[in-house]
Image 1: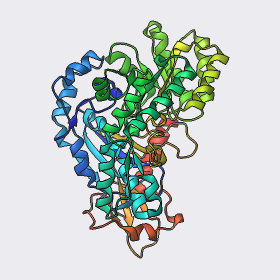
Image 2: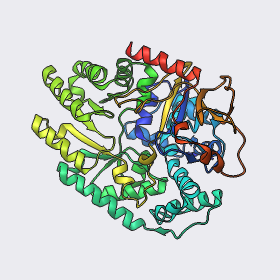
Image 3: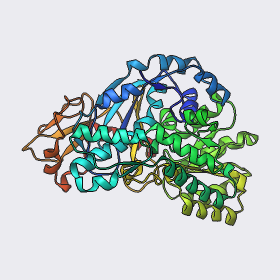
Image 4: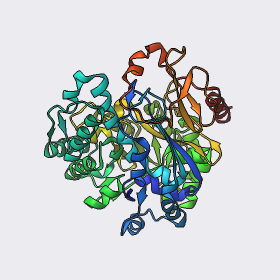
Length: 480
């Protein structure tokens, strides 16, 4: 049946229009943290149920909101059913940083899926706690935000054969908690116009997110990344730029120019796909200098944002530029207060600094420890056309680096030596002592034995020769 076209984030629309909507691309979903976890449902079937369909008025609403989409995107949506999915089987156990699945198809469609796919992290965590840490289950699901979230908990526990503890639905309390968090942010920045909401992917379901938006609206916020939520509640859909857009073009300047030259209006430049200070900020400023009246913005993401911010302000002053600074990625009241102090210290105008909030508003108010941030669930572009790609960012060590190509999981067979799992590439010969887990038949029950047999020293992330060769090649191309 599919999901409504508007059930995604607005930046997906701008990237589709500034990219190649019909190009074949591959995206992969992983959890960066959380250790061993359980897959409680058929990943491919669930993904196909999310494929977008256009309902009456969807295209017109997007156009009226500044996100008019052309023939390429519309053709991609018409081809949504032709995507290819390679996934871990139901009831398998996977490790952090192992790909749950890849999906390959028209760029605009496989990109569009991201926010809804990331909501799956809640159900996966419910199953994991129920099977591997059952003593934690009653507290983890005692209170939920809406009837749909309660239904998801019951379906998940039924799937893994665990009785459900008492569950209370507290929708009105949730709305009030979100509103209180949002009001605290408004108090720090002085005006709700300087805040926007980006938390669809942090929710357990669309219904929960609509409640969160009610709370945000009660506090005076008028902008959200969730297009359907904006239409439903009379808000304004907004979006910036994602890492996939820069990965798609292979360089900051090509990606930034595509956004400027293929879409009208102001542009927002994401800085950290390769390196914020060495590449992102200087490249963004070159383009901003070419059109100083456009009111373009820059968005900080990973790494030491305070050092990056100081550098960005100093460079802007030296070049006579006045970009809007956008600050997101895990911001809360304390961080917002700190960056407001920095803004005043450096003399940056209040109207030229805005903040986006996701998990702080949507997840930290939900009454459960089972949040997307807890496992760091991500959905990344791994191949565009025939070219593998990856995100580097500014984190220490592996940090937010993604795995390129068309990754699959090899699982160690019983009695063999070596790591618990290896991240290989589709079509690569599987090493001795391992079997291909991606695409295997569903299991009859959760593979608890595999989880208990895995020693901590066996759970390090290991790449196959083909995967490591791609990582090495792309690292050389990015950094020389």
